[in-house]
Image (cartoon, rainbow, N blue to C red):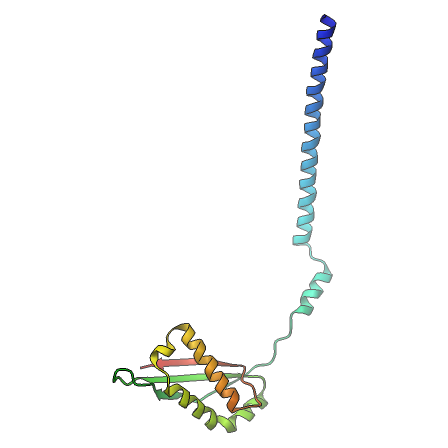
Length: 165
């Protein structure tokens, strides 16, 4: 029985040794995979290929030329609220595509100023409150100016000064 007990102990010892050997192999495999994965990630993050740089350069459009035209200052009285007279002073600049557009707009400035005056006189101070009120004002003035100067297109209206007294 002593031989059997020795054989049984030897077999148990082999299982423990082979089990820890398998564990070492698994740990080494995981470490190797992590190192390889980290190397691949570093390559893609920090080393860019020339083909990718060319794609980025091609995707960025060149900025279009911009010309600015300053409009004359406009002062109007707003719609009467509770018997109190209020005034709006507005200074704006127009963003156009070219100098030719400026030349095309200048003869129509009386028409543009009239469209602005008629619209602005109907506003109340509550219409101009907050960023939403300013956004609506810009949209409405841009629509009116584009109708007045058609076929020239005004890209944007930029407010330089807005004062309500």
